[in-house]
Amino acid sequence: EGWLEPGEMLPEGPFGDHTGFYTPQEPFPALTIDCVTMRKRPLLQSIVVGRPPTEDGPLGRATERFFLPLLKIIV
Image (cartoon, rainbow, N blue to C red):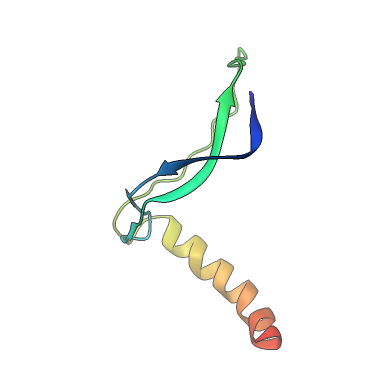
């Protein structure tokens, strides 16, 4: 748990992105952590990232099929 101070930015990156490309160093909001909350039976989320093909490939294609018709209307 934490908070963001409006306007406080710190450099983040560069990182190897899950799509197989690199993202440049950019300013991102700084998160100040106040505490870490734990529970006996945690809800664990994950996504396997790395060079394609990985599980984000099919997720990306599904997202593309959903949003592409909307983008064609807007653009």
